[in-house]
Image 1: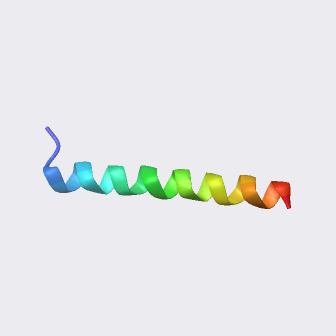
Image 2: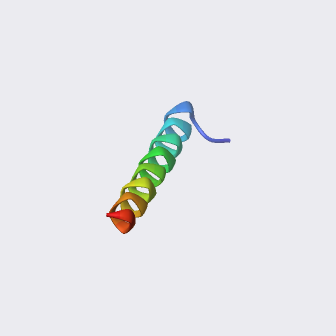
Length: 30
């Protein structure tokens, strides 16, 4: 069972990953 900290860390990574994907698709449009 994961600790709360580990879950938060995973969520953080996922958010960062989504953000980076958004950044890359934005640069594709420009």
